Image (cartoon, rainbow, N blue to C red; front, side, top):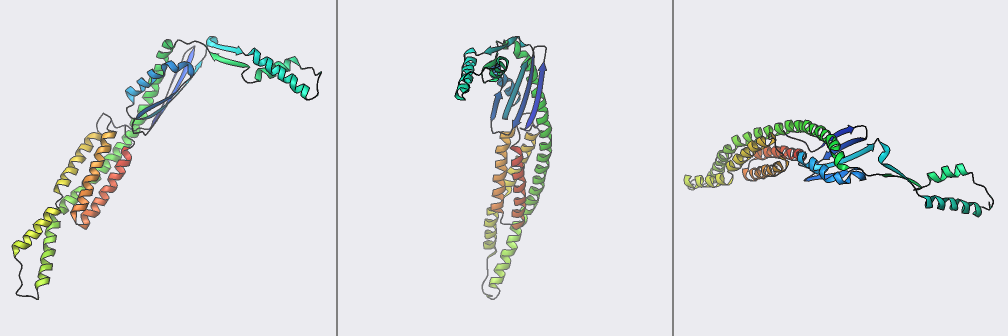
Length: 300
């Protein structure tokens, strides 16, 4: 199934000790890139998280946001920087002296509240966590987030598939117009050439042109404007394209290359055709090719 590269997924896990929230956002990217933001005490699991994601996501940039709360506070350590608190206390005295309040008495309770709010006097530190025990819980949340993410990518991919199919069918229709028109180009040229020759020599009865010479000129022109090979190749590319967009495997990079081949054949047809109708039709084909090229930039 065709998948878009853009999507969002969220997964949660909660028990009596821990809760995890995993959020994943994917956007277009030429390669596969995973950026993970997680709490420091989970850093040891970053590589495992990346490997799990890469098993499911093969293309695009993945931004992963992990938040965790430990409901049981046993592993939370509160530290008081006594030296820093004393330094703040002394600083308060110096402020009083600078203001000329030599004998001011500080309210002890108010000062304690004030010092507790000073930066870094009181800090909470994470204690030791056994990541091996945490990993199965986190993996559960990651799996849920990935499932939701893939579901969104597939839903958007279905919309892209419909658009890509319609545009390919439109290109095939226009190419059939070119195919029907191509043989008429030579016969029309032969008629125009004969008219010009007759016009040139109508006042000179003694002048004639050999039929063989006229046929030779037409043959040279027919060879120069022959676009059969390019039409056949483009038709083959369309068949290959239809197989790709219905494949279960990631095809974004392959389709990017194939669309370049679409464009190459269309340009060659336009340059060789020497016919306004064909040229105009190819311009319309190239417009559809460009719209396809823009769409496949979002395909995994």
